[in-house]
Structure formats: C-alpha cells, structure tokens
Image 1 (spheres, rainbow, N blue to C red):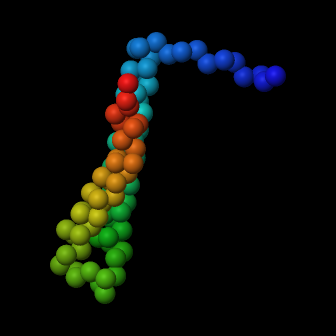
Image 2 (cartoon, rainbow, N blue to C red):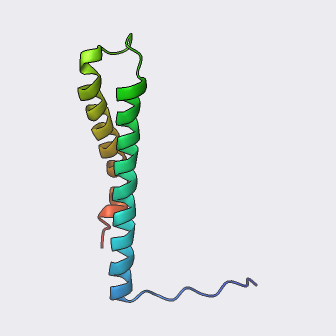
Length: 82
C-alpha cells in the first residue's frame, strides 16, 4: 500500500493552462541556454579558435544552434500529440 493519492484527471481548461506554463518555461530555458552559449563564444572563445572579427557572428550562430537543438529535443513538450 502506498500513501499516494490517486491522480485526478485534468479538466480541459487545466490541461490547457498546464501546457501553456510548460511551453513558457521551455521557451525561456531555450533562450537562456542560447544566450549563455553565445556569451561564451563572444567573450571567452580563444582567438586561436576563431578569428576575432568573426567572434560576434559565430557567437550568435552558436547560440541560435544551441537554442534550436534544445527546442528540437523538447518538441513534444511544446507541441504535444493528441
């Protein structure tokens, strides 16, 4: 026997609200991850790794790739199947 209560099924309104909250959290985390990766490339990447003139564009590109990869792997949380 467990002390856990059985989970009640969510109403459609509660389910929509939960999906909206999850979507917002996933998008915020993706943006912050992309921002951190871009900042690392721009501020801390060694000059021997990338040309100094290309640091900013490469940082932005790396941040967008990181954000896109994160969103791709969490696409089920963003767009759940019915």
